[in-house]
Image (cartoon, rainbow, N blue to C red; front, top):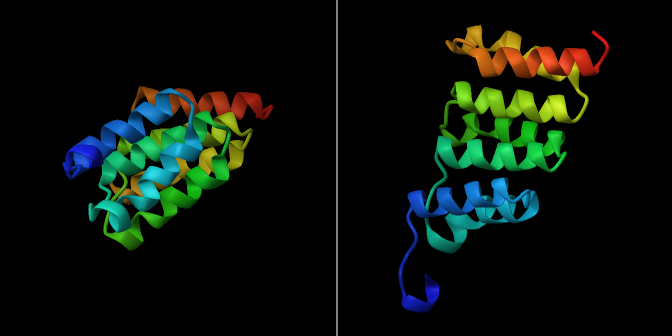
Length: 131
């Protein structure tokens, strides 16, 4: 896009971060996420964060996923059910059943209703942890 002097939008960048997540390229996803404001002047939205958290989870980077999750509030972004699902799934993949359960239990306080994906991810995390 830069070669054609086209400025990416948040939708374009979300697509790139999501593609990185699907390709299990968490470092590239985080790089795009982290540079979008300084490089292109585009602020990440909840969808950007969801895709970046998912990419970290698929890459076994549960700590980075939680870091992104926890930094959302400081940027004026409220996590949604999809965000929580991605973070819980990252914890599940990283063998962090306690963190997954904490996230699950914090959803009500955020005004979020867990769905079947949430419940499956937290059950799987507990099962992997022998709980």
